Image (cartoon, rainbow, N blue to C red; front, side, top):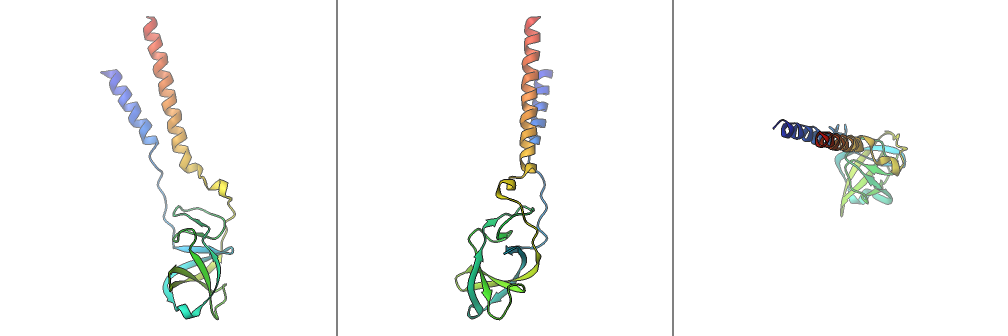
Amino acid sequence: MKKLTGIVLACLIGISLFMGTARADWVYLFVVYNGSSYEISDTQVDPKLIGSKIGKVTYYSNREGTYSGNFSNRFPKGTEYYEIHNVATKQAIAIKKKKNLFIKATYLHRYGGKVTQINQILWEDALPFLAGGLFVLVLIIWYLIRKRRIAKR
């Protein structure tokens, strides 16, 4: 009975290591265009004021971090960015939400993202799995050694 209790307890501890880590939410919804961060508003832009297409979202993530390219924490990859007539892109851009529906995104500041795609695999995500796997491996080795010692007696 003690053996079973020990194994169950060890398994529960091992499983708890596989649970996800807590994440913080973004402070605001935004898009990044050409190295600049724009806060997404609820303001609709008249389709008559829409200029030419200037870019699109190249990477989406709802996990807080620093990413490269035309990144968004709100819109999926492929969402298009447009100029707004008589408004400099350093002031605002339009985001195409759906056909003939554009919303305004206002310039905030330069975006600090210089992380390459390979670094977007976050170690904080992999670490619990690595630690859990190591823990389970140690438990298995411990169990096998104990079993051999008992068998030799």
